Length: 250
Image (cartoon, rainbow, N blue to C red; front, side, top):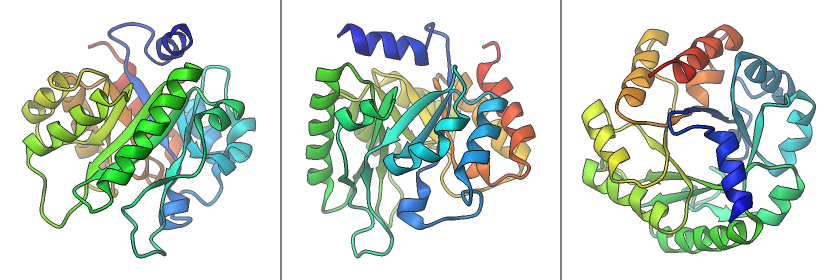
């Protein structure tokens, strides 16, 4: 699969490289929240600050395309749901890897939520997307979560991340499990690069940056942070601090 290998090397040029990625797909699932009112200017700020990869839904590519720099990679997120419906945790495919590639994508992004009744359907969609990406040589990032009222155990989170990797995901995004030791074990048991997500904005700037440091020290290959980044105003200066941390020496 030379095409996929070439694209993955653009994301991770060396075994020590770490990825600064920013998902901007939230408006489909939860609406035009604070920070996402205008994607074009936001994308420009993030690209100028050093973000490596911006992830958007397919219709939003037209908004951010003029803002992409030659070194900024594009991810297209193709599994969605909305909080307007009764099954917000059931993500469904709304496009194909071929469509993402035609839009200029360097990565296809999908989401699997474990622990809900629709888990099997989402795993089937993951399998479909993996097969499409294999044919086209396109890397696949899987946003991997456990969604249920009670907190998932570290072992369950490790299980979910290993499952999507073993089903063909090339990059896994998941929640930070709360400590460097737990995250280190998760990284060791997941045989592809692991990125941490941020979820709902929390903590001070310094507290958040410490989580990023801890995740990198524990073996994380970067971040895939949305609200905890673009809802910290002004975005540019804080994003530069994040870029320095993610891209800095081990």
